[in-house]
Image (cartoon, rainbow, N blue to C red; front, side, top):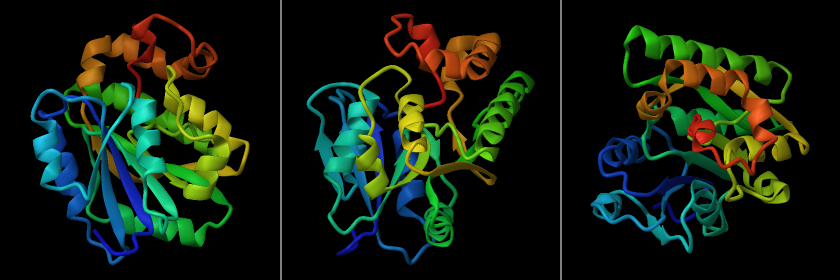
Length: 238
């Protein structure tokens, strides 16, 4: 870890041994001179996730309760004081080697921008997966054109000051959409299609093609029902 990191990369984890190592390797192998720290927030893993995290993370935190929202927020409140920016990456998401350098450039060159995200590809390449991927990215692009981007939790960059002013991630359903709505009230948010991360297609497998497309098309309606009990509506872009 750098002595005074200005970026804190936060990865929430719960039993992710199948996906975690490539994610952490990609974060540690960034081609950048920007000082950063890697924080893993564990929600009580009982597999080998912690052993994997110990090889890469600068800090491993134990969350008081389960939930991806509390995992991200625990990482944020325990970031180094020198940090100016938070980058939230999920444990099954692989970022390109220039991602942090790019994020730092965006923060410095677009002062009015409070938060942003990049495009994504699913790790699998079959036609139905690629179709769902195009639908999702087109939705995110359209939202971002009006500076009201929906920021998928697996790939979100946010200014530290803005994060806390918005109240951070909450442990609710559709926590990334909930956070997006609140951060939009404080400043501009944007989706950048020219940078791409690789995301696991496992949640798409769980919902199926139709379910995934339904999710993206109706994401705003779903986000207004944060108390819903039907887990099918909450697999999401995480």
